[in-house]
Length: 312
Image (cartoon, rainbow, N blue to C red; front, side, top):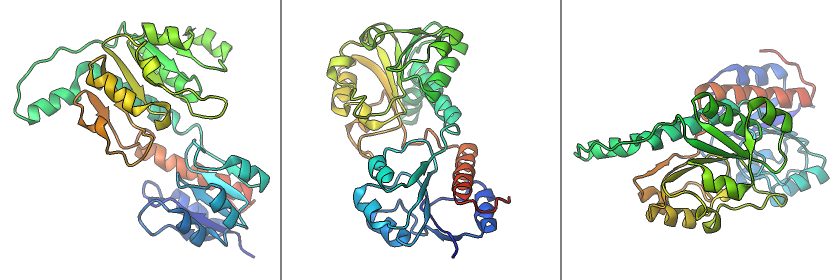
C-alpha cells in the first residue's frame, strides 16, 4: 500500500519545482491543499484522515485534530516553529515532528536589520509624509554606536547579534540558557533582562512562550526602557502585550517599533494606526530563496522518515 502524504501548505511549489519532483519520484500518493487558504481544523481532518504524513505549515494540530488523524505518523513542518502542534499529544501518539530550523535564520536576521534601519532613519515615516504631500526633513540616527539588546540567543538571536555587531552596534544579550562558548567567541556581554532594557537603544526579541518561559513584554518592562528607544519583534506575537506597547508608543516613551508577528493574525489592531511603527504581515521568513529551501527540506524530511526513494 502506498504511503499517503498531505501537503497542507497552500502555496507549495511556487518558488521551486524541486519539492514537487521529490514527491512525484518518491512514489507516495500526494494530496494537495487546493483551497487557496490556510486549512481549518475541519479541513485538515477531511483531507488528512487517511494520510500517513503531512507536510505542515502553521495550521492547527491540536488534540481535537490529532485525535481524528488516526493514521498519522509524521508531521514535517515547513519552518521552525511548532507552537501550532500539541507536542504532548503527538508524543503520546508516537507522531514524529520534524522541522527546518536552519533555513529561517538568515531571512529573519536580515528582516530585523532592515526594520532597525527603517526605524532609525525614519524611512517609512518620511515615505508616508512624501506620499501625503509633506516635504519635511526629519533627522534620524546612525546604527553605528547604538546599544542593541538581543532577548533570546538561539540560532536566530545569535545571527542577529553578529550582524548588528558587524555594523558597528554595541550588542548585549539575554538568554535563560546561554551558550557561554558562543558569547566568548562573539564578545557579547550577557546581562540580566531588567538591566538590558534600561541601557539599550534597540531591543530585538527572539524567544518563544512556554511553561518554562512565561515572559511577557508588558508595561512593567516597557517602562524600564530608555525614552526614545526602539523595539523589534519577529519571534512570537504573544511575547508582547500589544495594548501596553501601544500605550508606550502613543505616549512617545518609545520612539518606534518594528512588528512582524501578532497575538492574533491577521492583525488589524490599533498598532496599525501609528506612524512610527513598521508593521508587516508575518513575512520575516518569507523570501523566495528561503521558502524554496524550507519546502525542499520539509519534503526531504518526510521522504526520509518513510524511507521512500529520493530523486530530484
